[in-house]
Image (cartoon, rainbow, N blue to C red):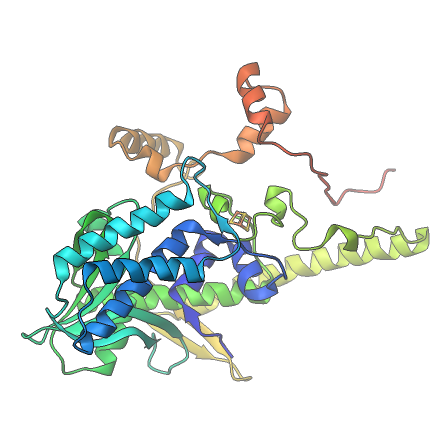
Length: 405
Ligand code: SF4
């Protein structure tokens, strides 16, 4: 049976499949320090949740009481280890950031009676398809209805950046929640999505139409299909990015020189006798060929089924054992990569650089940098500075070659 997906679970897969494998498939027994950003965000959330809960019982907290609540929650819930990636900041800085954000929020919204609260931390089930096969679970920070009957899905954000309206209009999480809300109360008024960027004292609102919500449903069904296929094939490559700094598994991640979750005292390399080595090599070659055949056949089947799909919709082909394949076809405007069209790629790069968005959409090519680092092709001072970040690892590879004549 398909697991129950969540927005964060699917987001984890999109960021790095290997992280997904650690978090949801292998679940290695390691200590995971809590990131300070997440902890601060959750203390602000908990404080506001409690504030609204009490307001619903006619008990309005004073600002001092709300801040005392935040202070108590921080103290009581603080884990033994808080991970602070930004070394120039301390726990106190984060604590005070949340504290200041609550003051701004309180002053803007007290006495917290602008709308009727329909739910706090409300658990919802999002059914992406009609058959109920593709399901997601979510929690709405605050669900409300105003005097005009307008339903609002509220979310508190403690991000350090304020997104643009365009970015918020593309943000999928609350729109997915809207799918569930509209199903729960089909005859209610229109739905608004509201993000409270509490550090900026700024609420941002977005409204989605049916077409956008439908596209989102198909997108997320496609994402779930992708995860299911990866789990079946064990296809979990690592994607290194700036987010690795916040990854719970960075210590054991092989892309970062870790053991992949195998404790060093468990690694025992014993070379078997020559005849067994021969058998192992033959088995490896045999498996390699089978994998190629399987991949080829898989692609052929995929193409046949895609040819039976209908543009803009989702078509399910049932199998005989209780599972089947979902084929979704969507039109999308794809930007060319360097190998597809080098000239266009250069033009796009120039355009992005000229728009001042280069940093946002570019990452350091670690593979090329590593090559230049290994090959001594970097200026001495840069190489020296990079050396402080490097660590010694054993690089191993098994490649198929012909026997020497
Ligand atoms: S450290 Fe980076 S590459 Fe490794 S699992 Fe985490 S996110 Fe993925």
